[in-house]
Image 1 (cartoon, rainbow, N blue to C red):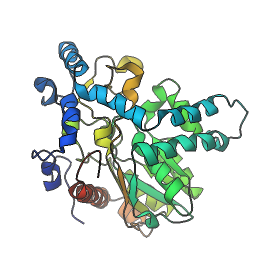
Image 2: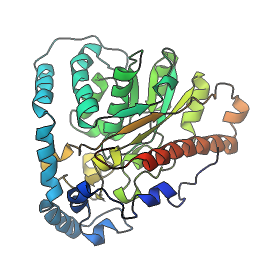
Image 3: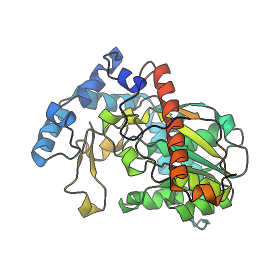
Image 4: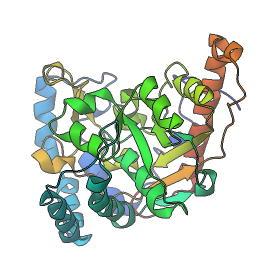
Length: 351
């Protein structure tokens, strides 16, 4: 496997995304995100107060913002609302595991996840046979889309499409626990705060464990950098899998970048609320809470062939050069999977 530097130029597939071959049906969508040239094409990732005001003013008149609400009405929001209300009315005391996961709380909400998977994002998965029917496995995926909808769709894909219907335990970034209610909700649904110790404990319990080595850098990258993998930390995924004697299954996710495209970031308010940044998308913060609703893009999740690192000894794991080489090879593998799917994809909303 060949390595890919974090600052490497876009691949051919990445270049193809901007060569003018857009789906005519995307015109309104492009109108919504191609605003304020000084902001959108700026090399800086932090927007000033004046630029933000100008950006929101232009977004408010973009037809793409209005279109997403029409699309939501067409895909059956009433069914989604009924499932959420059923959960809200249930207040029974439930058993939890050591991480706070409540299986009884998850059960009714799985219908919501399946609805998003089947009808909203219309997820197509490939390579599910590479996820074992039992035993520990570490899923390593690219991260994108401003909010962690990507993790939820990987969970739904394996839960509903894999023959063994296995439960996936995703590790989530620390900042998610600074958001009101969201951290607690994700914990009750099976997510675990990201750290090596928690991940190792999950794998030792033979769980399907999902990690995103890009971390905040992945979901926090601007739309113009879409599908270009960020740095994979310092080899934590390799070290973790070797320590737990677990195979690594590389996972690529395509569709999330366009579902909630990050146009810019607001940094001056972020620290006050415990966040790494305040995201600005075509609908957020313009539409308030409605801005959290992603565009109904079509998603593709590919599971690659397992990578065996269980034979690696302390001499390799303790060698920074060798560890970084293995880490970059893993990153390059997922980048190739992404690029292959992008070459196959014809439209963002269709296929």
